Length: 275
Image (cartoon, rainbow, N blue to C red):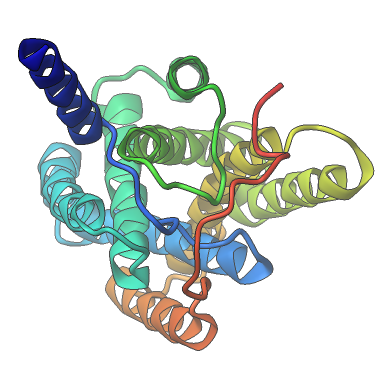
């Protein structure tokens, strides 16, 4: 009997260690302020990524390694926390957008895979992660992340989706001939369609959330290129470094003003599961 009790205790300890449960959600509520900050973060990812790889001429590979290190540091702080910290959360989001920018550029340009092939591969990866997430937990959470397992799936999905978004933004802006401003209008329109679907259809919230999340990345990419690309290419020719600093400051102010989540117990939403 004692041996069985020890085995049960060991099994319980292992379960807690591998899928720790938190008393409050570790991500912000999905509000209008959330999406505004997310678009700022994706725009910062584009200008910041290009600042290292192009302005400072470090190249895509080295810039990717630098931003990957930044991502791992910020992710460690976020995962190590037991509650929602706006600084940790949005630092990881910015890290995923910067590493997504340089990784996508490296795949598309240095490896020569091209925008179409890389977009298809990354899109399939996003679907694969979401499928694995749903299989592992029975639901795909949107704004209620209270277990370690959900948190890991959440950030892996964000990292891949932001890399996918960079490739999509470059594809639409350069290959279709719409330019950066035209591309920004296209993705803004698609996000508006997703927003309308939230109110007019019964599509699961999690499906709409990740659709919008992917689309905000190419929107930010085209907005960032609109700010920093030479006027001959349809941009405003603003400094990448200065633009990055201004956008980062705007993010900090908006997050500080809105706080994006009030302290309180986590509540699992009935419309969150994928059905």
